Image (cartoon, rainbow, N blue to C red; front, side, top):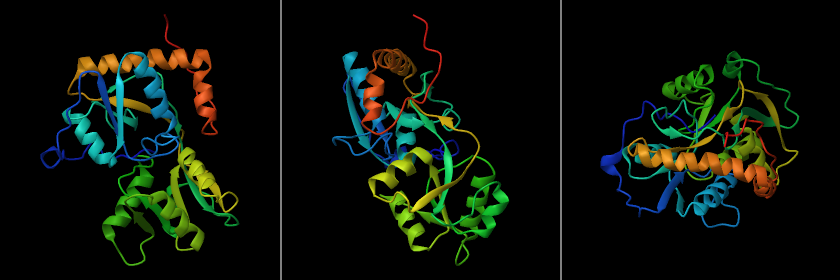
Length: 269
C-alpha cells in the first residue's frame, strides 16, 4: 500500500512555509504510520525513526523528525524545503533519491470483523461490500484503487466506499468496522496489526485476504539536492548493513514486537 496520489499531485509549495535546516540537521517527515513512524518525541517514535536516528547520528547529523500530511511531505521534499520522507515506495516518487536496502515491508490486506467469512480474492467482490479507506492512500495502484476512486467520485448516498481523513483515521475505521457501519477495511498489515494490538482489539477483527505481494519501504530524499541526498542514502545503506550485522536492528524491532523482514544481500565492502 502506501500513502500515494503523489506522482500526479500538483505541488503545494506556494501555500506552504519553507523549512530551513542547518547543514548537519536532516529534516525527516511523514504522516503517523506506526510502527514505522509514530509520535515524535515519544518512547516509541517508530522503528524506522529510531534506525534513522542511530544511523545518521553516527555520521554526525541530527535528525529533525515531525509529522505532516503525506501529500504535503512529498511536495515539500520534492521542492527541497525538507530533506527526506519516511515510508516511501520507489514507484510513487520515482524522481526521489533512494537507498538500496529496504527498511521494511508493506502488505496491503483486507480486514473484517471476526466471524464474517468474507475474504478478498478479486476486485469484483468489492462492489458487494461497504469498504472503509483512508484519504490520500493508494492500495495497489491498480483495480482496487480504481474501484475506490470511482466510488468516491460518484459520491452516491450509502456509498460502498467510505472515506476517512485526518488524525486517527485507521482507528476510526476500525471502530466503524466493529460497530457494523462498514463490512471491511483495507490497510497495511503491519500498521493494522500494530494498531489493533495497541487498541486491545485482538480477536475482534481478522485478516481477510491480501492484495498482490508486499512492497519494500524506504526513506526517500529530495531530488532538489541530489548530491546531499546521495550522501544521506549511502549512509542509510551502510548503517542498515552495520545495524543488522551487530544485532542492533533486531533489538530495535523487538521493541515493536517485530522481526527482521529481509534476507537481502548486504552491500559489498
